[in-house]
Amino acid sequence: MTTRGKDRRRKGGVKDVIRVVGAALVVAAVVKELRKPGDERTWHGVVAGFVPYELRPPTPSRFRERMWDPEAEHLVGPRVFGVGWTINLGRVYALVRRRLAQG
Image (cartoon, rainbow, N blue to C red):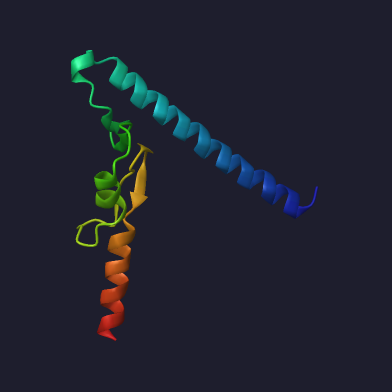
């Protein structure tokens, strides 16, 4: 087998592991919510001790808050929908603008 073929297999293996871990976290988040009484289910929180999840339908205000908030303190935050984190592109834009303005 060529080196290129081994590299492809290795990359596919890492991607497969990431997919399995992601799916397991989604299942864990759903199970966590379903174990709560119906009136206590929020469909958002933390799973595995530190991974945020957001299983409520996305809203425009949540999208803006998490994806485009130039004034936010953090560059990375919970996803608009799903499990894990997302980059606040508004914060990235603000930081790049500030850096360019400084010269």
